Amino acid sequence: MQAGRPGEVLSGLEATRAGLTGSEERHGLAIALTFLIGQSLVRNDQPAEAIPYLLAFPFPSPLLYLNLAHAYEATERYAEARRAYELFVLGWRDADPELQPRVREAQAAVQRLSSVIRE
Image 1 (cartoon, rainbow, N blue to C red):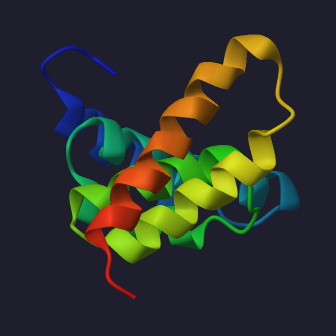
Image 2: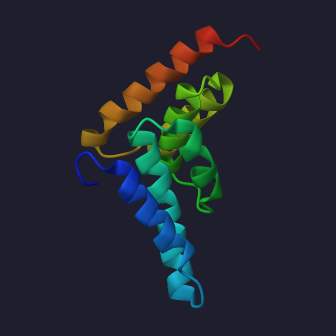
Image 3: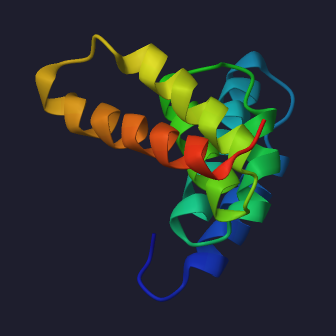
């Protein structure tokens, strides 16, 4: 993202995504941009705006769940955040050693959120 202008960049990405119609290739790119926009919104402290984009991404993946977890937690949707962190941990439990710190952070988030949630 360009420094100091995340809103302009996100608007440009959304306009590009909306204009991608017609071919399978363009549809695939639009799907990828859906995830990228959601992830960018999470990173730019716009979690509520990120959630619809992330939920629209049709391919479940650990990174999708991690971004959803951050967005849900930031919007105080703690049960959903905990579940998303759990799915991330499940997906990356056998990840390479250099990725394990992220797994441990997510496991800690599950524990932290479990103490907040009364089921």
